[in-house]
Image (cartoon, rainbow, N blue to C red; front, side):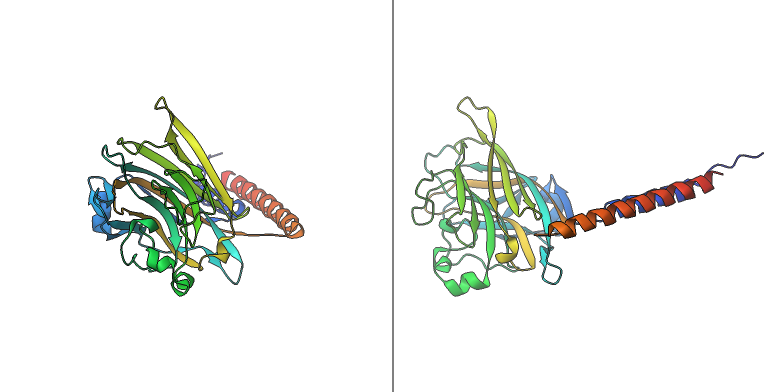
Length: 306
């Protein structure tokens, strides 16, 4: 009896089909930038305002007064679908530097944001809107209705007209179409020193939870993890497709803002507010598909090996 080697290509194909069946979710957008100089040629990151490439990072603003800058991904994210009521989940991981270069007074901060596509520039330029909007634009209901945003701010200056009464100068907040944060927490940072901070922003569409994990520094200079979260249905506040990225600004006083690294993944989609009956039924269907698929794969692999 002559033994024939199994056709490995067929086996690999069957395994791939099986994995797709048990994991039907697909990655919509994925990238990982550790050196932004490569984006000059491929133009995957759009820089506006005063944002420039500086070494391997993106300098969103120089350490000069009255500056703003943005860095956004070149493709829009399909955040939700009106017909199916499905919403994408996403995770944004990044590291950045905010440095006053020794100055005791500084402003204003950096944001990660999602917004209406082709979001207008802040006019006239001022630091209060962190590179997203100006004071004048924030006072125009028609402008805000047409240009929506949700942002996580890393704010280094307390604006009494926008910030919560109990907030401190350095704080992290979650903003919904307004520079007054829905929730905020003190940020234990040392802006006078050239420190690198990291952050992870995750949106789970099944729970509608927007969570932020970010680093700070304790009194003995030890890195600490901080957290902030908000339950928010993004379909109530943003259009189906959004642009996303970073913004920063300086006002009458300044600081340096640098985006060092950025990785992003959006996985579409999962139905929000799914009923229990529907969930149970889908679970049964998934188990049936997995069982049949596994059985079929085992049978065919067995035939190939014979």
